[in-house]
Image 1 (cartoon, rainbow over the protein chains, first blue to last red):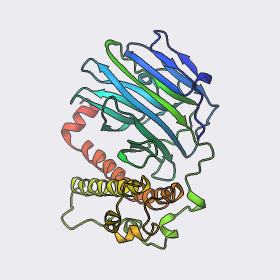
Image 2: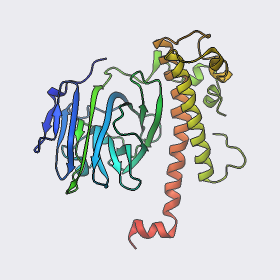
Image 3: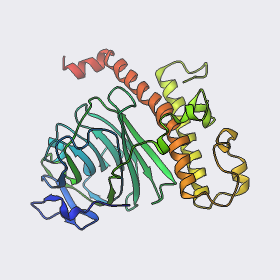
Image 4: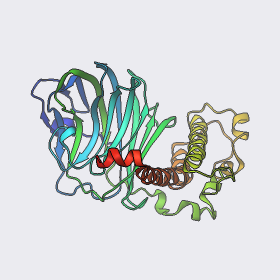
Length: 225
Length: 111
């Protein structure tokens, strides 16, 4: 596993709320009245197809009973806080004001589509974020949320049908969501981001596993139909 | 997706698909327990036959490669393409349907 070296990323952090080490990015009292982020320019249209990225994240605490998000992973063509993005895919940890509960969510900015699920605070989660452009008209984004590093215990899965075929340049490891409120803070971290270069999405070159198994209905493989 | 005869509305179908998703998630975690060496032979024998034929014979622990093969070749194609594909299609239908409700149209269009 080759994880990203975040010391090679660009840090924009005017209030010193972000700490970057080689494999970990930590945010402490990141609030909703600042533009703070850690990103890398991967080159124009670098993320132009299928990918599968692995990372770990934890939401430590929030302050204020409002919606408080912090990005833990994202790809975009914008360099800004996520409230200002007009393009991109992202995964965020957040306090949801309605319940209130801690959440993990994924978003596509272009279409404004989102999916989310409850998580526990002060608990590490191991994510697998995957874009499959052959699923649906413009592709599908999945976020598998596991409770163990070997990714054998699946807590939940998030999924959204994408509304555009987006090719993205910038990779984010942290990002605030600036809406002008200073009394809403969030602390947490992400670490061990593995982009899995060379990942093809196909195991041993099998492009249609259900057919390769000689099954007319893929659901029958798992006994669910 | 083949639905039971009492699954009529989009809501019924979504509920059915979410139940399938939960069954698959639990099945994934049972096989995951095997990868961790925490699945007993009795628990292994209770796995669906259609899954067991895609897995090795009983032994105390799955290898990393066997686990990878299960996830990539058996679990994910069904979980993503069949179940999540259907859930996302139904969500789209529900969203389109909601826009035709007058009270939603009022909010969306501001009229």
